[in-house]
Amino acid sequence: EILGEEARAFTWSVHCGANFPFGFSEKHAPHLGKDKSTRDTPLPRGAGDAEVLAAVAEHLPEIFEEFRPTLVLYDAGADSHEVDGLGHLEQTDAGILARDATVLRE
Image (cartoon, rainbow, N blue to C red; front, side, top):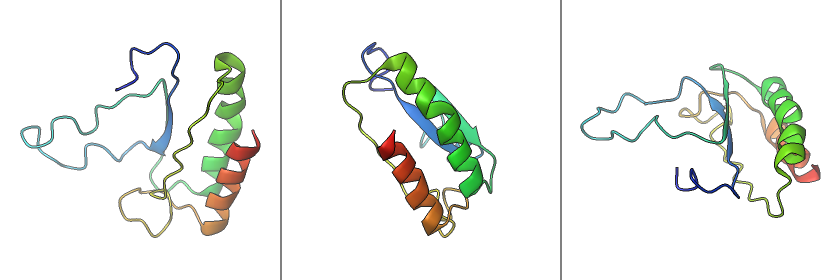
């Protein structure tokens, strides 16, 4: 939300839609699960390489065409990896490499 009112910024999140609010109480962590991106692409729990790559292929060219950024900051994250218990996605090493290569090529 830090860039929510900034018209020159576009944020995009591809994530497991079931991740939030992680069971934290409203009293102790009221902010969790309420963050919004310019575009959010929630994936189902257990989505793997094919689903993540499909989301990137579907949305990224459209985002670049519509927004036309002059600077791109890419925070890839690793919580989508199959061994990360918090991300609830099932990407393999090869899938993460393919995701990153696709984004960087675009």
